Length: 119
Image 1 (tube, rainbow, N blue to C red):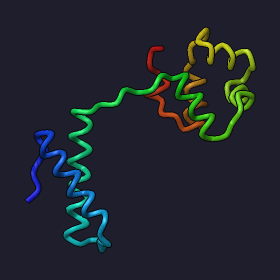
Image 2: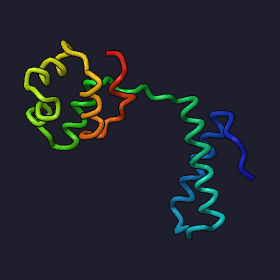
Image 3: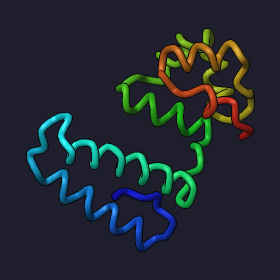
Image 4: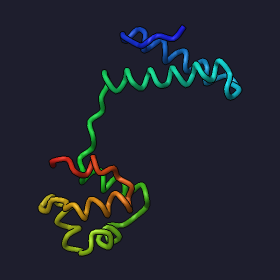
């Protein structure tokens, strides 16, 4: 019977069980597939509570996403509107405006919650 994960030992046991289940050829809608799904949810909740990962710096997130998408800084200028804005934003001299955040979220798919952080 599955139970909430309340300790690091239970967390490690759940990880081991998930690993074992993932090695099998599980059929959809089977007891094992349900167990895998529920364990994944429980693990995620435990990790969110005990192993929180800080959101990235907005500028670093922009640079990382540009690299991931094989985009140049010149293309960022097109998104933001002006070359000078791009330079000011990337150097930290200019803060992101609401319209910039909207464009970056729409174009680069960076969550707004990352971009609105103080930096």
